[in-house]
Image (cartoon, rainbow, N blue to C red; front, top):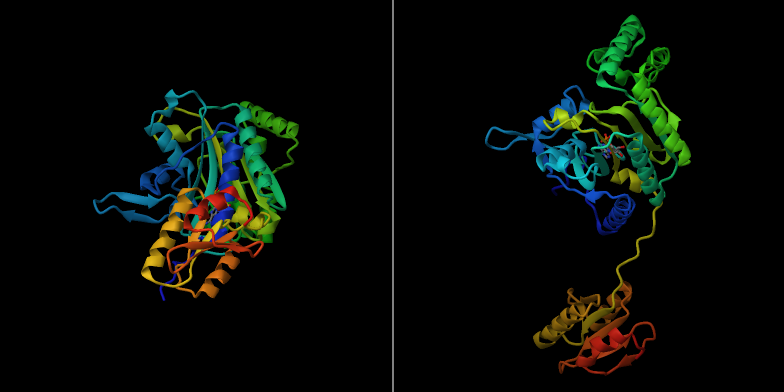
Length: 415
Ligand code: AMP
């Protein structure tokens, strides 16, 4: 038997219902704040992610599904949504629109990660990006919107952590300071951290072994090194969050696996998730658009994992689609089958939810199936091409004739 590839999954009808519900909530929460839907292609030029996400990141180094387009051009299945949205912003000259341009998406993304619960190779993210505004209100509003969406989905055990990364220059200086600290404590670091010391020293804050963690507790913190205007921006964001009554923790060690962030950084996690606890996060990326060849444009946004929201959210029961009419056949001949087929089609054209027996069941079997579906009425097409109608709630049956079936159901009157 051929199975779905490792790290992928099928979305079956009940699950699809939950996803549609999430999509509707995202549309409601983000639409109310002026965000418009955007969808970008599933794959992009590899260079977009190499330049946008950053050469040194895990994503670019080892998690991208990259392929040749047959003409020597390297393409990559999108591992994230921010760089593509910025690419689209530049490509469509959206800087000419009133700023900021506020966009949201719900799309699938691809990362060659080791699969486990909540971590897949093809997964979905709902995301929001605001391009062209640098004030702290944008950051705070985006954080509040994600909080609202997670609340609307009843995500349990939420925790919000925030930090600020300042500017790349501040970070470069800080990185030197941090690397020096790590070097002078090299013998206490885990082999893993030691190996990546020069590539990405910030990741040492993610280490789980006690010896490395101790070194990191003594390490200098970026939040203490911010330039005055960045520190001011961050405190304004915090004041707005305080005003909105949103609870958060300051986490000077917060790191995210993408290089493009400047200033605000945030992440929501949930206790309901286990090891892969990140529900969604994001931050400000004031240099990204320029890095991708556009004009200097401030930006801020987030992405949240659809599967993780659904795992950590309340499992609302999925109501089955109502069935107004089930069309059954008293006898299976081609004339009756044609009448039944037409009746179901006419009923749907009249706005009713109508199903036809497609499994060749006996009349008894068809009535049983109609009952299972919760059908309100069953039309039984007779041998002479006429039809009777059975009200499933009362059990009453009437020989009212084919032409009267749809009007009777539309009137909703009892038989
Ligand atoms: P990131 O783009 O890495 O900031 O991830 C944002 C959110 O997307 C995370 O908090 C997760 O909820 C979700 N996510 C990231 N990677 C995966 C994955 N491989 N499988 C499922 N969800 C993921």
